[in-house]
Length: 373
Image 1 (tube, rainbow, N blue to C red):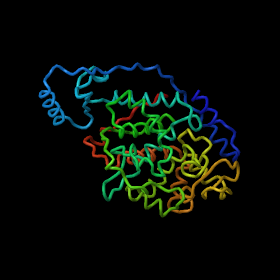
Image 2: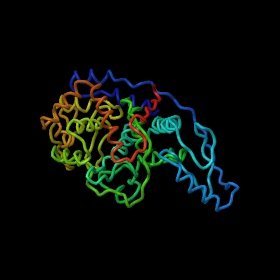
Image 3: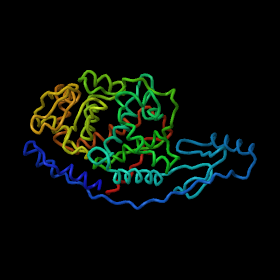
Image 4: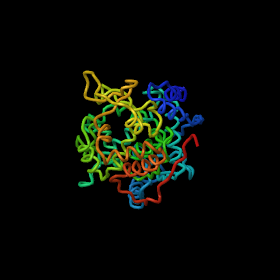
């Protein structure tokens, strides 16, 4: 059902130039695999046969010995049996492997395929937005914010205007967290972003675990994410605070190939592209090939394409073609989707890792297999 909905979205008639129509209709959806239903294993709540003193001593020893990627479990004061991982059933300590993260990936991909009751038949775009927004709060000057912490779980950060509507993505991922309680929300949200990008025909994104969840005291102040109503100076200030240069700003903006705006969230309305559930360079091509006028309506200032009157661009989007330095990168990406994919892969990996105190090395990043591969 979901695959059919997305196919209709991608092949829908487009009132635009013949050149653009010819180009986009060649991007046919990849074959999708159907996943077998995975069984759920229970958790034993009976305590191990040892004294309470021995339990606490053992627990302290485990924390002293444990490193990043090692998880500890308690259930009502006692160790809980774990799900069977790649190393088999164990008790108390679980060090996940690439195989275990692949299982999490597959579970997310399965939900993306099965749950088609969201915009354009896919939760993929809003999941990418969640991973982007939880990472894009990083401030290099104070080394605060970023994906480490998953502080969007708490108000006020979850209630920031830029995060409106992201509860849908967080709730979407709760069944995955329930099935894999050993993964932190911080790792889950970024891994979900990787999954959504790859499942929507985007490039393979290198990823590594090691993020921890933090409490409400680590919430970031409002105003760290881009404001679509602003222009190029705002973009450079927001992204520069994170440590991105002009080329990287444009590459990250390519995520606007996905999804749409909503009047009850940002106030803006409409999709950026004709295929909002497919990762492509269409966003850049449309910026250059279409004519854009201010939309006549009672909402905030946004642009509308002259041809179909069904697409939109924000002032921050149009800033990319108004600014000559930004525009040269828009032109590069519009001309070659593989160039865009390569540079988007690099910059989204950087975004997801900002401020994370990894104990692993960059060469430890893993590439998880798309379900369509």
